[in-house]
Image 1 (tube, one colour):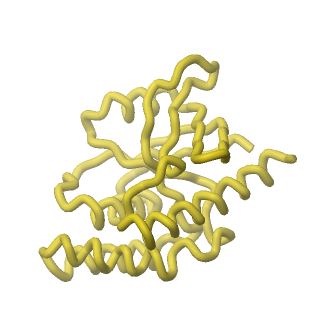
Image 2 (cartoon, one colour):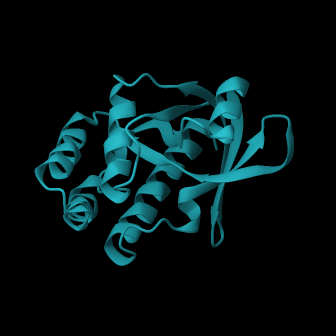
Length: 175
């Protein structure tokens, strides 16, 4: 099977896991939504981290999440409304998702810094009997980048103490 086809199966699997998480687990990530982080050259797992799969056109959802957060200071309402959107609409069409993944880090994160400096990594996702692993180029996203904004506001829904200044990395699969 070609890498591009395998990657599309991975994205479809991620959407299924995320629908399950939103509907049955209150948005808590499942094991398969996080990845082991490895150097491209191999070796031991360096860390585990959660990732977002982002829509090809994320602006509409970003606007919805921003509106939810700004509408009320009650973070329980953020979660309730965010879960409603994510469980009802967001993950239903896996063909609507970009190949790139994103992850959010504090500015002081050693892992975020190391990934940015390396510019590449190998990620392994696994849950139950399903496993996917790919090499990625890693880029730091500018604050005005639509993927940065999508990642920030998605994370804000679930983390009311998220600082205003963060680092968002993009992970571009090498297919």
